[in-house]
Length: 216
Ligand SMILES: *[C@@H]1O[C@H](CO)[C@@H](O)[C@H](O)[C@H]1NC(C)=O
Ligand SMILES: *[C@@H]1O[C@H](CO)[C@@H](O)[C@H](O)[C@H]1NC(C)=O
Ligand SMILES: *[C@@H]1O[C@H](CO)[C@@H](O)[C@H](O)[C@H]1NC(C)=O
Ligand SMILES: *[C@@H]1O[C@H](CO)[C@@H](O)[C@H](O)[C@H]1NC(C)=O
Ligand SMILES: *[C@@H]1O[C@H](CO)[C@@H](O)[C@H](O)[C@H]1NC(C)=O
Ligand SMILES: *[C@@H]1O[C@H](CO)[C@@H](O)[C@H](O)[C@H]1NC(C)=O
Ligand SMILES: *[C@@H]1O[C@H](CO)[C@@H](O)[C@H](O)[C@H]1NC(C)=O
Image 1 (cartoon, protein in one colour):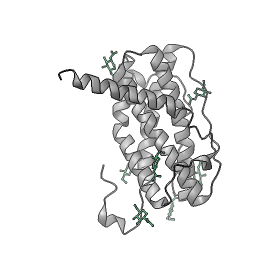
Image 2 (cartoon, helix red, strand yellow):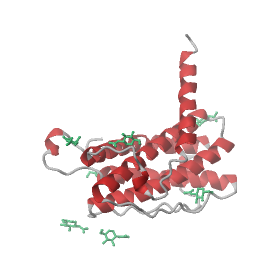
Image 3 (tube, protein in one colour):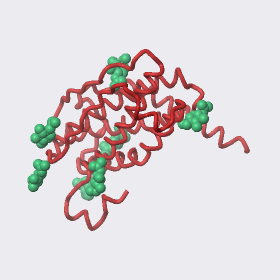
């Protein structure tokens, strides 16, 4: 029995790897009405999107720290990297729910591609660091779930069937630059995911009595 936690951990890890592999083909490529895994209640879907984003936000800092430590970087050096990442700007100030959902879909699509690339690179460079890989895998599958729910939401509520997404330039060849790009990307992701929590808060007055969305 002493070995149980290790075995369980390994099983969980293998699950995440499986999730990564099987989740890959589930790429909407912007064609969002192809998802059949949809609930009819769009209010419920939006709640679920908000809750999943909140969950990712609570782990984003941890992921970022684990990542740069895993590369052997110190937090202070991260600011000095001159590599570029093309993280899309999130412009949700005062925009309609439909616009917000569209923007979120676009950005989460980018995040999913970037996380996939970072995970592939880490699988090669840092394959022994199972805890980092499992952390990346957890976030990746969370992002895929949100994309799935966003596609349902946009399709069912607003009959949006296409969102144009861009995946940014590929990671650079140089392994130091790849690591540094990963850092930058995860740093920007951290900022974005907290904005996304705020942007998906539902402001119906009746809800302020039952829940307080500004609490972490
Ligand atoms: C839809 O979901 C919301 C939030 O979960 C719930 O309050 C509402 O009763 C549901 N509506 C229907 C028609 O099931
Ligand atoms: C959100 O997406 C996941 C993955 O496709 C699905 O299992 C879940 O039922 C979806 N939730 C809603 C409310 O549609
Ligand atoms: C894995 O990364 C963590 C930080 O994310 C670090 O503390 C640990 O030493 C690394 N383990 C291996 C085996 O490289
Ligand atoms: C946002 O919308 C509110 C109400 O519609 C308005 O009062 C406010 O000035 C707007 N803010 C910006 C930055 O456009
Ligand atoms: C952001 O959205 C607002 C309102 O939806 C719009 O007026 C503004 O031009 C947008 N800014 C950018 C950079 O897209
Ligand atoms: C991910 O990698 C693919 C293949 O190299 C590339 O086309 C795409 O632009 C990359 N995207 C990001 C965000 O890293
Ligand atoms: C989210 O909203 C809270 C409360 O209104 C605010 O303090 C915080 O700065 C906001 N975060 C972001 C990233 O916009």
